[in-house]
Length: 319
Length: 198
Image 1 (cartoon, rainbow over the protein chains, first blue to last red):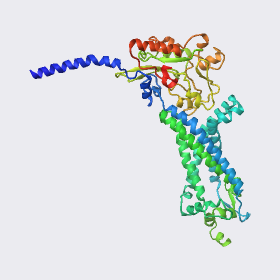
Image 2: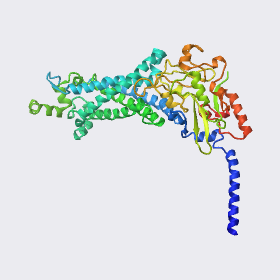
Image 3: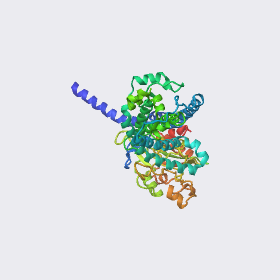
Image 4: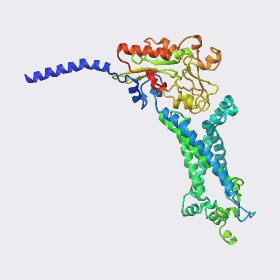
């Protein structure tokens, strides 16, 4: 009898719970005020839709706010000031150090530094990078710099053309970087010679200081790796943006945009310094990528080990 | 002047998708573009809710803030509109929008986006009101004709309300106080300062 009694009580309890619960469910719906809603809104609100566009099942994605704050805040302010500072620093360097001359004067004899394929890869990447960089900077800073000058319609056409160019030129750019990486990676492994090069400040700061270097000196090796790794970051994030939602969701798209913009600004800053030292900053440097033939005295001062390797005993005899 | 807003009472929405269909038909929205959609939360479970969502015409609109060509503008009635002549289809407004409102036709190569399309609160675009050009780009301009958005007008359960924000908020608050519950005005705390309380 006690078992029956217990069972009966259990059934009564079940009925009571069943009778009460719909009422309590009605009185306490999932969220009945804005405070609760706000609490829920720290993560995306995900549901189901009956239209084919599955990503529209995200009802609310609050992280867009953080993406907006990053883009309108640090990306524009820190990124913009970084580029201004790099230009100022280069101007200050030019004012203090002047053009770095070949200390022993031009010899009149030349030696081949980069062959046709090497120069082709370099200028392929360089010409693409100029358009990619300018169109990218325009997308971030053009609104406050270019638009007030040319007006809204011309600025929109320009930016539209920039977007198309940016998309298409990404392919030859990547091809060129791959070529450069394949040809030069074996010359860009860091070694003890580079430690000495860095210890002497690359010989950039003082006259008549020329630390030894191979085909590429320590600074050029740093540049090589920044370009290669930066390009990988730009390519991965860029193709995510170019093929929106093919590989990732909204959070991935936002992250890709930020990675792309930050890597882009950093690489532009690095390349500004590269352009300076490879053109007006140093006598004889441009020839390396211009004609491919550099003056032997220039080569001896900046790439002594490489010259020895190229000329063999002849260079030693000359000294 | 009235400040226009949408409000979806999720206690009433029955996921019939009439608002979606009405919108597509009224504006002849192309394939693959949905200015309005109905999202069902907790589908098939306790606490299932359906919410009809489109552009909420935010007070501090994120799309406007991030647009690299500044193609957005806001009407006196608080409706957020844009110019398809200026838009370059970069997709940034979609990354910023909390409601997934901006839509892009797929044109050209890759995943390349065409000019953005979104809910106009049935208020057209920068062209002359109810001109052919305006209709082709943005759809009907019902506001210029003294009418409210068709999605809300078509809603059989009056779950979706559109109009003066103060009026629709008071209608919703009255409903909540009569029936004793309500799951809040979805998106209001995100789109407007002060949410429903304001």
